[in-house]
Length: 242
Image (spheres, one colour):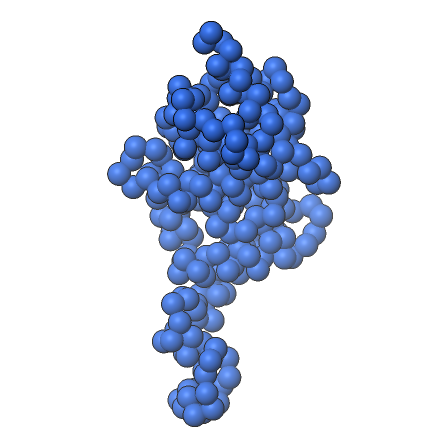
């Protein structure tokens, strides 16, 4: 914490040498991280415990699929829309249908949210932040959510996303958020005819491609380090125009 002995003694004395209380007080005053009180931490754990109790197999530190689905529904989220992906990213979900206690707690602590109502209000705001064209649209949040989704959607031990799953998540992220990438439909159709799986490199670079390359492909530079599948897509599109 970069706290010297004199400062440590000051906070320990003020809290009657309760180390935990002293640390909590110091962090609240000297860091930008919202450190919840014991009561607030208990509130968070109670919410997690309620959802984690709906589970098979039993693991007190993991919210399994049934509890996760109920929790997301309690937040007012549509399970088929992008805000679900965003909240899973914020809360460090390791895979679909699961939350682990520590990253879940850390995520809400970082946001300063400790009650279900606050969680509902935050998740409601994600709809506007991810809807392209909305006054509250947040491109940085969209990008983080997009890049997170690949690993989140993978089914271990696979390291490549099967095409059906990739297309489903692309639909959520591009079509479902009102993105205006003119080449999305052609790209989707091309993938259906040319590949059975999508690598992380292709997934990540499609974000850059959708943001940096014009719809007529006039500024596409083949010398840049684009994945082969994207090069082939561009060649396919240009061939159709001839």
